[in-house]
Length: 578
Ligand SMILES: [Mn+2]
Image 1 (spheres, rainbow, N blue to C red):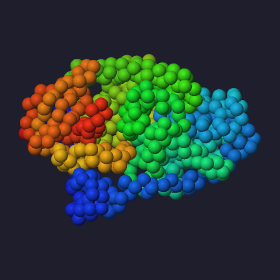
Image 2: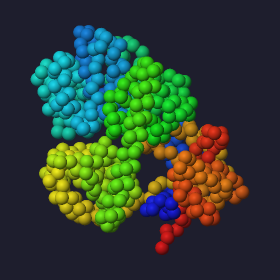
Image 3: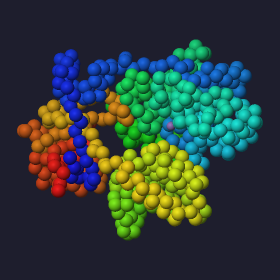
Image 4: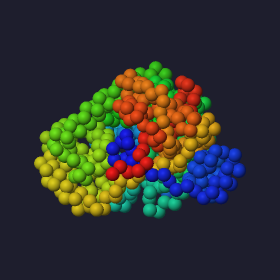
């Protein structure tokens, strides 16, 4: 089914589960048909585990390879009162991971002996040479990494040569053997048998603190779970229901803390209140769409240290002040992003390019803000549904960011051009690189050929998944409550999407400061339901003229009206247009 609002977008309804299973869920729970369908689709015969929070438990941290060694080294540091240098990456996973280590270690060591360095985007991910020099210069004896380190073979060897031990905690794939740390904790090690491979960097750091506290016979530091959940959601690791994954349990427990006004981070609570996020109704999308981007704005358009300090501060005034700076950074980030995106679209149009026909986007801007490139590439890949490579051209070195579409592997694409690149890294969906400016034309030519050779391998656009067809009368308070019990939503457990056939729209109005949103009510078979379609004000006419169309939507709640509403709206044509 083709979207009539978003060009190039297709929807498909998932197969419905067998009726014996549906019937048994309905009898057991007395739930709606729609909810039973979701449980059967996502859980099969073991659907009960999806809605039973007790079914999710935490694994012993000592199941992680090298955890004993890591804890032994930290115990020694505590015994000797050593100074510890924590290295965190600049994204939300790295920042929260560094915060967890900092908060977890600080009470165990002498005052002022835990220092954190947050890397800067310009230095790329991982430890920099500057960090190594500082560690040596300031006479640290122990370095702990979080969300990075697994590929810092050289830097860790240089620290070791200077008599500094390194404990690595990471969740990236080891490449070319393990670095020579005193302990290397990473669930992606070949020889690791930890049941949950999907830990985020902050999850690994939390496991380390849990293991240390266990040995010290201290209670588990569960108040840190607010930070764990924040990094876990922002890093987009799976929140699936396979029973092995603790990520879902981290998030559930964290939301419990936040609902009670508890949790370790005063700064997070302050930021939530500045953003009008109601802690009683906190959801993964609040973190993913509202809170995470503000923390990331610090590394894109400011100083990532501000985000770290906000997460760990215990002073109310400082939290307010740092939150304010972060919102400023975010405004700058938004302006830069909108500006670059419109320049990019204009360049594509003026250059007579047709990304859908070319099969890719390759754009070079002069001195574009490197912190924003990834966001722009992502918007372009989304808009044209082709892989996008966006570069900022510098005098001698240019930097690029790639985002995938249609199953294209951007990391393999960079591998194939390694001979032209200075540095590169990433994964299938997103990657970054730097390249000498004078080889840019050659790189573009080769990428063009590379994409042309693989046109046949690039999958036709996969339709997006609608979970089930429903009817308007079923979308009520009960279903909203039922859906709440299936949360938290995220990768591996996406927010359910429904199809409602034969809809008409009434009482349409434009809302928002720029009248950019569309609000109204949807009617089907005499029943009605309010809806909000964000950023769809320009489609007012289409909605007005639509008679008996199909509506794709999610179920949300309007806090002002205290009513269930449809949101995440799209309209579809039942038959692909000729
Ligand atoms: Mn990470």
